[in-house]
Image (tube, rainbow, N blue to C red; front, side, top):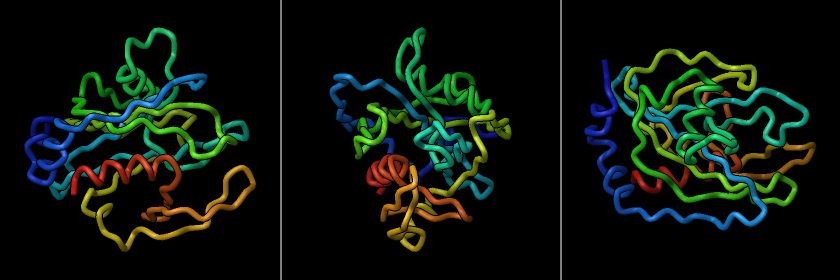
Length: 200
């Protein structure tokens, strides 16, 4: 049974550990924006290769990110002691994965804001977690699906291309990653690209 320590020592993640240790993440000014946090979760897969966890949000008419691929997480709530706690709480609520018990946070990436004023004013802080034991997630009604992708696959250029996507009834052309019918784009793609830049 693997532990976060097993993954921490994996040679494929040595550049990430080193760069996160020296990385000074940019923290966006809050102003009128609400704060949010997401968890970029890594585990050792069956082939002993690091994998990243994604969810697909359920379809809700009032959700501006309805149906999109995302990392588990959400907005800060009263009672959260920190944004790390926000990411842990939201991940547990959405997927039943208990990062407080099973995971270890090893750093944070740069804060991000939506690139259009049509989306809610929010500042998202991504945290990188290593997870040891990983029971199958039990998804809440907010999540339609979940899947893991090897980091090696995410680094392969063949999965990346400019893609026409639809959001709020409008079409956009965006850089996206394609995997088994799932399309990773938008803020999730920006977080993922920032992560991959640290692992290369």
